[in-house]
Length: 534
Image (tube, rainbow, N blue to C red; front, side, top):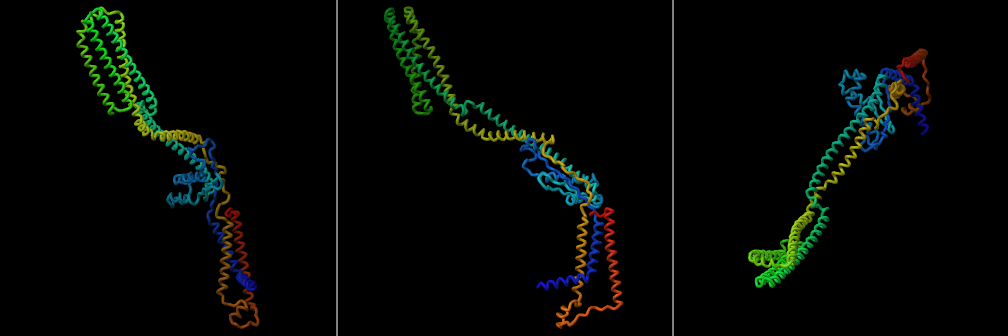
């Protein structure tokens, strides 16, 4: 097997040696074509500028235009879109007079697209450092355009950040204004409602209940005081009647006795009736504290109280009718009354005054008790209304507080951007004048040309060898004829043939030397002229 491989390799080498002139010719032609292609290709120069994204170091906040967690690529991508926009690139093209030929043959939109897609390269290589590259045929313009693109990064970033900070601050300020209006409106409604129903609010219920209990206690004391004074008044009236009776018996005879008996009987009836009325009123007030006016016991007691008050009024009218008759009789008795009777009358008048005052106080206390009862009964209703009214107040207040904090942060961020203290781009390596073109690459072109020349020459050599039907080896002949070869005779040339072969070899050698020398000389010449850059 190894022997067969060696024979095959030897066969291929023999083919190359026999066809060496064709392979060398292909090599020379390839080198000449490669050199010509390099000389004809336009020179393209490339400039790069390194830019660093320097984050802000002064009080970064949530409202800053640049979130501290955002990556450099997002920021670079945003600013790159602005720099490579049609407006920006068209301004650069006109400023540096780029693509003059293309502009005369193509619309400006297509020229901008070519510049954006083929000639500008913006990429992030490592960390917060990225590069801006531009390529073109004029090295000076390439350098200037690259530096202009890098400067635009700084300019556009500052403008973009300040605009965004200003818009953010304005938006938050508007939201804060609307939230404040809504909160003020809500607080005004709550304030008016609380002022209107202050005493009926749930937080006043305990106070109202305490005041109501105190008033009920005072009312009970007032009733007791009135009853005591009424009893005292009845006793004083009885004493006065007894004194009058004694004086009547002593000085007035029958008339005085009749007057005394009549006064004594009327006093007893009036005192008994007054005690019943006071007792019924006290019971009615006690029942009203526990039951409503529709309760049967309350209704019954009210009816009885009206009857007793009617009897009391009738007795008062009867007493007024007999007043004239009594005046004449009393005039006689009064002239005969002793000083103690006068003191008792003064005491009786004082008791009447105090009773009237207590009754007036009782009416005031009844009104106050009714008022406090109304407030206590309305407390659950006001509590439900207040809960419905203040249901969303807490959310409005929290939202307002958040907007206040955001507005402060937004204004701080805006001031930071106006002072250019925020995150910004910084050129750490500006573009320099390109000494060598970026493309075409002489070494690559010549390597490709040599490879193609050798490939074409070798391919032709092997192709001609395949279509050649002559036998080169005895083994091929034996395999074809199936007859053993006894001996192989080398080619025998005549003198004329030898001379012709020698002339052909000399001619080929001259052509090879001249071609190689010409290619080498041309390469050295163009290299010295600066047209070939290695």
